Length: 193
View 1: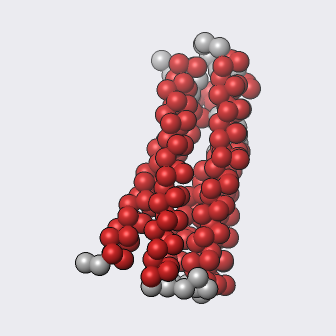
View 2 (view 1 turned 120 degrees about the vertical axis):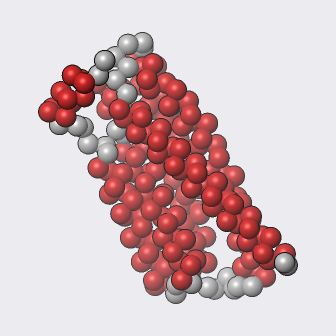
View 3 (view 1 turned 180 degrees about the horizontal axis):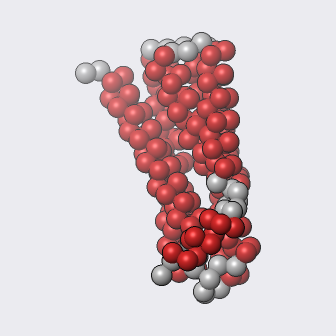
């Protein structure tokens, strides 16, 4: 094996780290959305806050290894590589600027709520678009970039895949920002112990 294959292995590991963190964060969001008491929400909020620290490591791992592989085997003018770099920039900005700030707003709402049942403001913040849309748009974008890397798409196809992946992810995340219907809320309330 040559250096390129070792670097490719680290590149794939960085991708796994990011996808694993996204899976844990998604689980936290669903648990927070379903929480009815502060005691139910707090552990998931803590896990989400700690999980968010992993993303910069994954992004740096992907970028650093990508730089080496591009310089060694590919060229900087390759379409799917340029779109992949742009996607990493979007992820690196979107995470701290939107998702982290949204997480702080949720944390503030939960602290303001105090012990006991979650009030309307805290429950609304568990469905905050800054959390859901950024999480699932990022997942959609990453899946699109993996597609581009797999098929070695040209510039136009790479951009289209990235835009579609981001848009589908954002739309999927937006669905979870909506308040449950009164009937669904009644079922959850009556089936809780």
